[in-house]
Length: 335
Image (cartoon, rainbow, N blue to C red):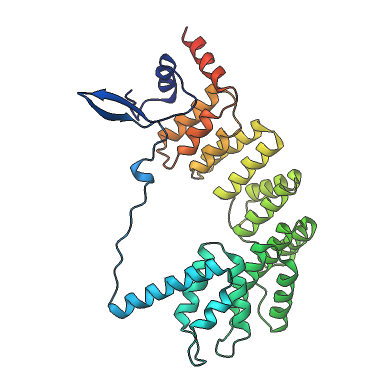
């Protein structure tokens, strides 16, 4: 079975219907000259662009190589033990301060991994260390960590301490506290912070809007989310407009509310407003479609835009409710 990558999903399914349809896409092989030759691995086989290539490491010298390997070993120990402070204490020799690059590299890496509990633990420990000058940026990262974990009590204390120390009110700290309330299910308090930021500052950022929209949607406050989104979309004096993540959240919201027509309308607005459409966009649309023709149309649009990392869309196609009926529907259209 030879499948041409450029052909449409409709023609692909037509060819597939002529052959026996298996529920599971398994390895297929044929016998050629007495030997088995693999000719197809199914449409979900990993593609070259999806396979990660192992990067060759380059070190400055032997000392740099040892330092890098020691740091990675330390990171593994922290992840295995689940306690960062104990491992970091063991890195100190003769009560000397830890190298600043090591500490910052560790914080940045765990931030990238979204292990905010470990980030908060390290920063709280650093606050008590005389050899570490705890700066405003450290406070902002700490309150962000508490925001991501939904620990609004500690986020409140950090914000009060920052105000006491005379730090200028920051959109980062207020957004973090708002997120902490939202993740803890305190939607009304999160909304209160957002309204105060709108009226008296600091001015909300795109991230602030992303988080408040998510908070409203998770709390099933669809009308509030729609009002915030539409106000930003139509506000002529706004310094920014809804971005890709906000549009994705609205598509998800309308899907959650069962308002599929409105979800399609938001999708159309993305193209009108020049918002880039990604695999997430098309996956979101395909996840609620039950019509074969609609799914095929969305798939073809993604194909035209050369959307990569689109395997989930194919999975969604096969998971369309009544997939067997979809093939029958297509066959009727051909007859």
